[in-house]
Length: 73
Image (cartoon, rainbow, N blue to C red; front, top):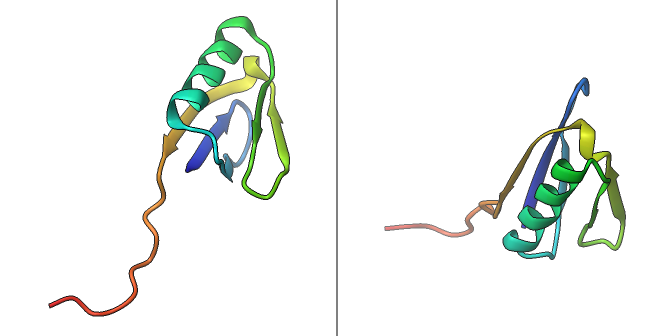
């Protein structure tokens, strides 16, 4: 699942592919923003992304639409 995190005063958003469910990511992001604690997520390649909770502008969670292969009638 694709996760995009906007960081305050940051020129770009943080984008990662996570194996966590949408509900897990939303719960972690909500808790991080509410408490001001770091948001810690793992991506599909085993890397860990840490974003300060008090610097999160937004979190967008959704499934990427992969390119389609083949022909449609």
